[in-house]
Image 1 (tube, one colour):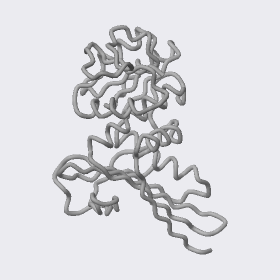
Image 2: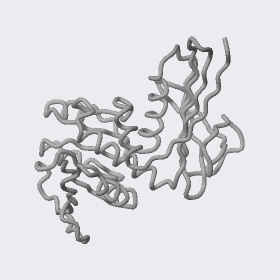
Image 3: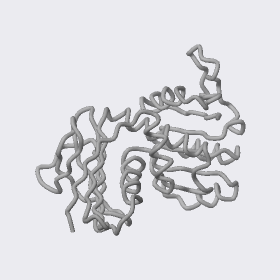
Length: 252
């Protein structure tokens, strides 16, 4: 497995460290940078065509997106993008562009997609995540794991489930999914959540996306993490993501 990394900040640096712990990684190329660590797998990446995947934490990922497309290399970006021409461009080259490999667009929806896939007739789905900002004094009460704890959140647009974002201050971040389903054993509500240092969660999401794409978990074209939620979440768990869970059963 050969992955090229363009890092512009702490998220990218942390993602690189996470990827170096992956035993299937044979090379981590630093895009237009000279490696400073004495690791034979660390190399300078000038030509992206020799890598399966190129990833970036850049606020503007467009330069790497274009460069990877021209090289015929799949690409994973931390930022969310919506340009339809990217779907066609990567689809024609039979490569994948995974957008929004982050906490809000990657880990959070993968949690709710994973719980939904457990079976039963889904009655309600809620997904929530934190984002930097002034904490709210009212809204939807969201039970994130400690040390984030319960927070007020505001609705966010989503075509698949009820989504909420909770503004928080400080270094901690979290995501949560709550799925209520009717089963033969009664109505079951499952809550799963994650909480950790914000840059660590973001880096886990970026690294998980890179590993999932490198393992061909996604079809070609522009994709989102929850398209292959099971693989994305499995890679994040293997990389160190800790998930807390709670179940409540109402007997029929």
